Length: 278
Image (tube, rainbow, N blue to C red; front, side, top):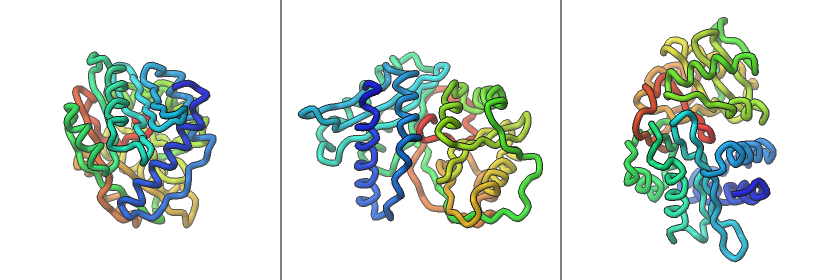
């Protein structure tokens, strides 16, 4: 994959996820803004060119995959195949290329999976352990947000590195700065944890203890636009701390996809991973 492929990869992602929602009878999601999506794709092409691949047919992009390696922890950021090219081995070959980028030398590995049975089968057979998930969504109402949670920024990047290493065995490197550049907001509980949020919901949360994680989740939900629906994703059975504050905020739980883990990824809690940067 090259930087010039970013627009085509984004367009393919839109088509693929619209088809996935249709097959699962989910209401269509609003398309993500173009520029933040391109920042994500270009970030990973730049930082991890060996993990960035496309499949072409007749000069058209019909598949794309992005993988990253952060301090020995590998992650699959994106794997999409055009609906017309699915079940023909394209996704399998792209996954193989991204796993080759890990080279077998990764300390740990993370995949966040949609409910598509073909993806779930592929990840399970690649030696990953499956952790089914809940998502929480709705218009949050937080009447008493924790006062210690404040908005953060680039000056708080050292905190994110410390906390990420503690909960998943690796920092996020320059990925959090890329998220901020794409318009995300950061919230911090000084010395204890941080979260990242966008207009669609909580996109990353990591803390050194569960009490801090609960406070961060409530504080982040309270800071969102009033009356706007939000989402909290990737709540596995290991993240019980997230259930109560999500319900207290008026969100509804529903079954989501799955977190697939392999090797040493730290305790992986209290932690809500990010779909793009894991």
